Amino acid sequence: MSARKRREVASDAGLSKERVVIEAVRLADREGVHGLSMRRLAGALGAGAMSLYYYVANKEELLDAMIDVMFEEIELPPEGTDWQSAMRRRAVSARQVLTRHPWAIGLMESRTSPGPANLRHREAVTACLRRAGFPVLMATHANWLLDSYVYGFALQEAGLPFDTADEFADMAEDVYLPQLPPDEFPYLNESAAVLAAAGYDPAEEFTFGLDLVLAALESLRVPA
Image (cartoon, rainbow, N blue to C red):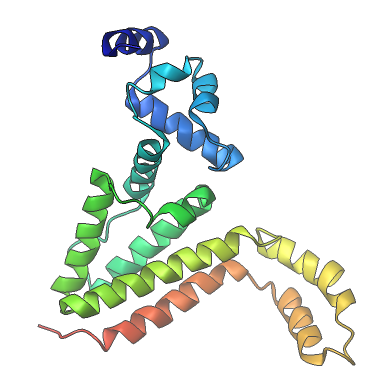
């Protein structure tokens, strides 16, 4: 199909690159990224599959654009505040984005052709750490460690069989405790019972661990 014909088809379908990418994100949110295909995406848009190639050359370019949307959604570390507060806000925002889009967890660091939002995000994070006094190598260590923590937590959280503290308490009492006879598993039995009774919320583990990581990194910077 000629470039002119592709433009005509795309125009007739009311498409734009933004619409194509946003619909691809919606499909991935509902069905996962592995089932995403250009034909499946075209069907969701009510367009012919060939019309999509006017906006994205192939699936890899589509994934680049989808990941750029993820980085656009993550809050940049704000300026004018201490580095730990700035990086905490950025990490919390990243976790929220990955909770909404769990398919993206394994793709955030995989792109070799990063989009503008991706690059802006990485520049802002690096700038925050460097201005705080981290030498280049230590800033790289800090960035790597923080991203590993956020992605790892998001991956583990996505696989949990409960979403809220109430659901955890119900599972602890109805599912876990019956499998943990106190004479065989005394510490696990005790932990499940105490946590369920206390209204323990596993979601709070994120900020607990994040604060430990940030506190440990503080010793690696060189204050101005």
